[in-house]
Length: 264
Image 1 (cartoon, rainbow, N blue to C red):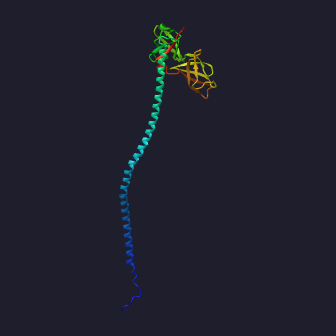
Image 2: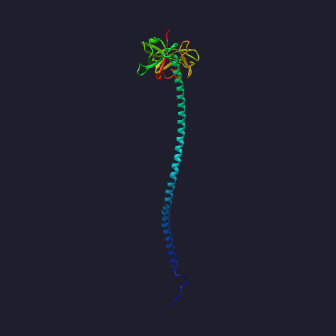
Image 3: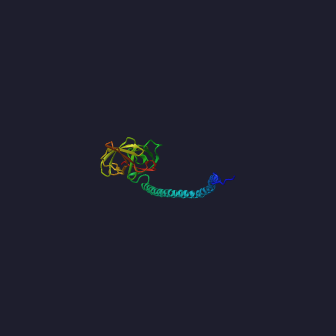
């Protein structure tokens, strides 16, 4: 006997569920594979762009460095040009002084038409004893021991200690430990400079003593010749004294000529 079923079979939707599951799995797999593919592909695409970018930007970086380097060169060239111009001015001043010195020597006529004798320096340190000069004028032209010696008219540097008929030995006031009386031109105050060698002197005075950078010390005579000028003042906050450093004007040890005062 046949009986009609009153309800549908229990597992009628199983095929749909399986189909959905299979589709989900397939989509997940495709998504995973697609993501890796996209990732690899994007790197493959972007890498040439990065390389091209670096290749293109490298020359521009070089151009920036070039202009920076050029700017520094321009600045350095400007500074060097200024130094060259300054050296030209100094050379011009030197040439003028050299010409004036030569004219003065010609006016003195070497033998000394006035009170001073123009003398050529034969020897200077280190070929002669420290802070001494050997000159080619001696007793035959009126030089004697004690004669004062000048670097130029108005700058006195020392005195003659030994004389032969044709040569003389000049000792500078700056000889080590030599004491030289001087007058400060600005105030008229008397001081005693101590020779330190190398055309240098020193003077220790109380801190409140009126001596300034650039002050000039004169030889104590009516001629008013310069002995030296202040180029440095050393002050210690813990000391009640200060040290004045003084130097003979000009470069004594490069001088070719000096002037010796005749003794009457």
